[in-house]
Length: 89
Image (tube, rainbow, N blue to C red; front, top):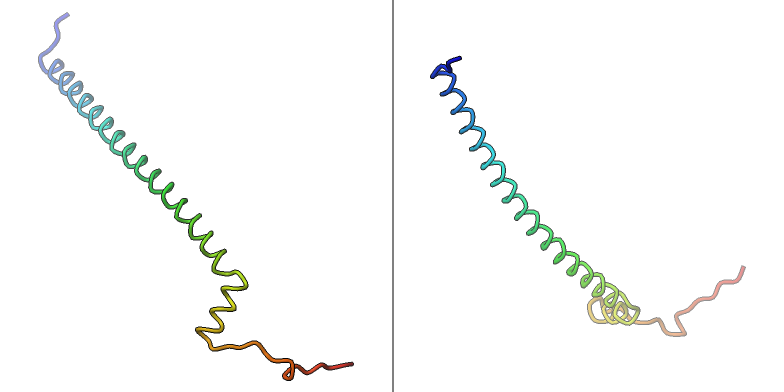
């Protein structure tokens, strides 16, 4: 049995193409893994920032803060006892 040179050449080209494809696939895999790690770190950073913003929001919406903002920014005042009207059925 003799192997034709064209068959050998075709097999050699197939092996080379397969090897190049494997190297490319591994390179893509590594690049995507690096991107995944970076996105994971970004997610963790955003989770921390979200927690800080929630804490800030909870302190800004306390009764005292709302009342102070109403007085300073909106010029609102508490009604005096003479401005209350009590309605009876």
